Amino acid sequence: MESRKRMYRRRRLFVALLAVAALVLGVGAFAAITSLNTSAVSADAPDTTEQTTAPTPDPTPLSAEEQLLADADDPLACAVSFEGEAIAQEPMLQSQNALYAPLPIPAQDGRVFAGWYTSAEAAVAYQTDARVNGAELVACTDQRMVLHGAWMSPEDNAAADTQVPILMYHQFTTRPEGEDGWLRGNYAYIGDFEAQMNHIATTGFYMPTWDELSAFIDGRLFLPNRSVIVTDDDADQTWFDLAVPVVDKYQVLSTSFMITAYRQDPAPSPFVLRRSHTHDMHQAGANGEGRMVNWTAEEIAADLNTSGDVLGVREVIAYPYGHHNDTAKQGVAMAGYELARTIEPGRVQIGTDKLALPVVRIDYGMGLDALINQIG
Image (tube, rainbow, N blue to C red):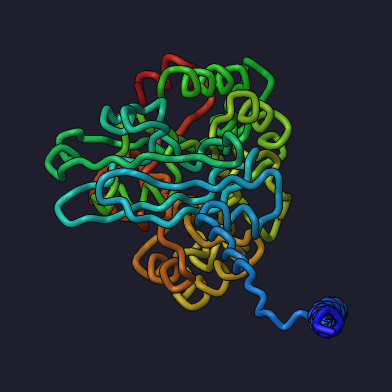
């Protein structure tokens, strides 16, 4: 009887253990199924976690030179920058294979600007053959050029005693014996002209631009002692046919004073500046002298304005026949011109009257020796 009771107790314990086991297994299966379902839902649900991305960096700003070149979008563009003591000039755009457009002339109290140079060492030495101005073609490396400025004292500038000859030519001839007639003296033999231009181009002369000459007269700019300006009056056909090829050959900056009522030819060379010989005042007025000394200042200014419009520049004129007076000067200034060239002999110095510039006249028979005696 006792053994039968023990058997029943063992059966109940075994059943209880089975029930507990079943319960444990059921809870585990439910947890596993729940976990699977949660994972599936998580995989299908959009990710609401905040996404963080690196900010786009700002582009590196272009330098002033780079901006000039980008705006120009021209393979011949050249960004020219300026360096030197007390130099605060913004870079400027130039065009390669063309003459330099007017370069800045800085000003500083108590000092005279001494020009732009291709290196700092050349600037310190005032090295003429390394000085850069509008008489030279622009040539850059990788579309950039750096120019270095120099200064000197007013006392040193005055001590240099620079005197600038303005050479005045008229017509040209291929005849060594010269032309006949009363205008014979006006005709320079082209062989002499070539020898003279070769001398100027190869012996260290500096060729100032008109804006430089103006600043030199004011005492604001130093010019080397061996400076010279080449000009031609009237733009005669012999100038185009005979002289311009020589100018081109030696790359000598020259000015052609053109009577715009008679001809308006485009510049025949990069080295030829077209400037005014008036529009229609190269003829006699009422008293037999030129219109320049017969007309009112207002009439003179109107004529010169017409000429300036044709040429696209107001800078310097040459008086017809060299005739001028105070009224003529007034008319020139009214029209916006700063300089005027006469036929009076002499050289330009600091303080010269800007509206009465003197010249060195070149006549027939003046060969190379004669030129050297005149200008060195």
